[in-house]
Image 1 (cartoon, one colour):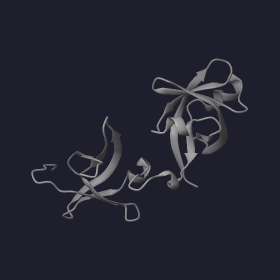
Image 2 (cartoon, rainbow, N blue to C red):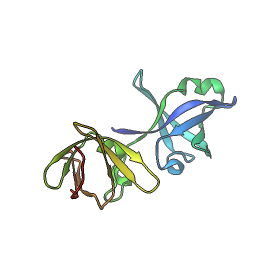
Image 3 (tube, helix red, strand yellow):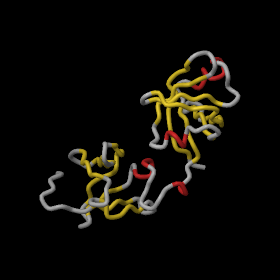
Image 4 (cartoon, rainbow, N blue to C red):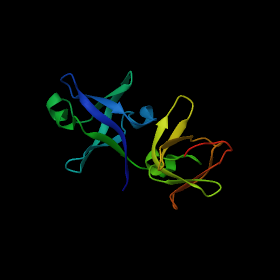
Length: 170
């Protein structure tokens, strides 16, 4: 089973088991809604503990969560510093939507066959996402929009992008 990290547990809040979460998902409301099943993942021990969200509210750039069955600070202190994960479900994606984790590491080519490099990460900007591609000389930024992206083939691990005259990337 594959998992996606949707947040990191920053600290406890108060004495009743509330946790402050730094979200790493664009779907905060649906991922953290009441009755959602999450997994607290400890990277050191590779252990996952399933938890159910009791309540959720946003606090600026952070989220605050209570879990069912965890009603004291002592019961949640061990979760601080760990990740929150969900089971990866490709059925949630629409056509031409991808999990960022699936794009990282893919080889990127221009439509003329010229190799650019590998996707290092996906960066979010106000109006679109951008692929940061690690090439031999320097990082290349290509907007992840239909005007530039021709094809994403997850099986072949390749992204084809449109070549534009005058583009200097080397």
